Image (cartoon, rainbow, N blue to C red; front, side, top):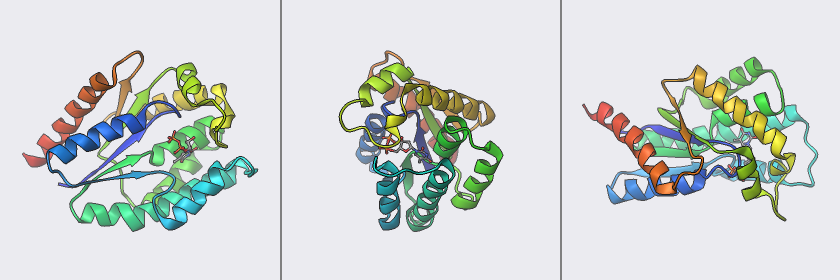
Length: 208
Ligand code: TYD
């Protein structure tokens, strides 16, 4: 049993907490898994991550898009495909929906072009399940804003609102795969339980 699960949402939505809880659950059930994050997790993708997040860099939206896609292309071929071939469940902290949400809806680039570039980058590796963690943009922004905001986070709250709307559109167009999880004022364990119901349903379907 091997498949890809992606976690999406605006900065500060709590993806990492939920990924950690899911990983602990898989670990306790002795299910083989791998957690990856985007951009990053290969040697070249980590270098690209540094470029993308460094506040000293001025990057136009088109170059930004290509850099995220380059990091993804490498991750797919170097880590995701080999791990799926080994039978692992791969959990991605962000994947191709991030580019449509941030560069398409956030930056306002042509969504058809982004969709086509994404297809080129991912080599047919589409997540079986995508969780989009929905939080209030103001709450999310208050979690990330501080002294150490990176280049993407420094875009501010109105940018996050556009991205958040984008994720809702993406979910509407991909109802089979995408699950919007309403995280507003919810305890992390309640959110985890909702995620586990979806994951268990999918695993059951795979086994039967
Ligand atoms: P990161 O520190 O990993 O943020 P988070 O914990 O919220 O995932 O930084 C990744 C940033 O890059 C984040 O602001 C989202 C953004 N991003 C894009 O704009 N496009 C993309 O395709 C991806 C993968 C990320």
